[in-house]
Length: 252
Figure 1 (cartoon, rainbow, N blue to C red):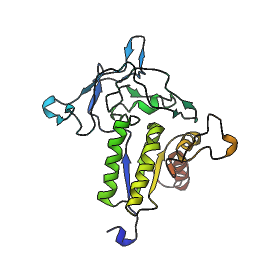
Figure 2 (cartoon, rainbow, N blue to C red):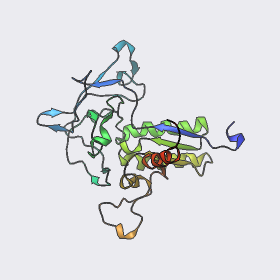
Figure 3 (cartoon, helix red, strand yellow):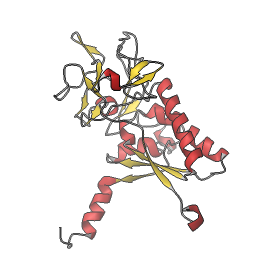
Figure 4 (cartoon, one colour):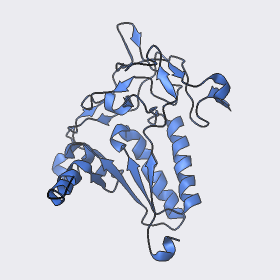
């Protein structure tokens, strides 16, 4: 109906997180300090489902809170995180550690509190209430790519607005965005739009919209090779400034 009226249809896609089906072991009713790999004998946390086992789904990975994304509490002492990732000031970080629950589709690191700690912002659980997907792992990204391709095919949408892209490691977007554009193009959608929600510094969102296009940036840490993953975005800090300026005389 929207297309018949000459309108484009945009769907909001959330990829960083899901519901609140897990708690971190030992912290069912409390905040969970962030952990990274293993430090001073403290590993990342095991996940515990909030619901009774009888209420969980039967999956190839056993009883699970989600049908398609599964947790696994098997510790892999050699596993690492796919990198690089970029912090709030555009600084690059590579994973130099080892040890994580690499067989799990979710991050086991605790809550996201410090938005300026480069790894915490990518793998921490937002507000302590949103299960964080391990999208930098190919197994998990393959599932999400298949799901969002099916979303385009089944709904005939014209664009995706990406929720919280800054909490998702950049290697995921380097796979997902080209795959989505190729799929949309195969359906005749040659101008499929992907844009993001940004509430970060310009240096941070530039990592996703095409930073380093000037040749004099080549070889610097801030240069990011390859095509931009998103074609643009809504920068909410700027939006808020404009919004408040327009309504400053209005009643609250």
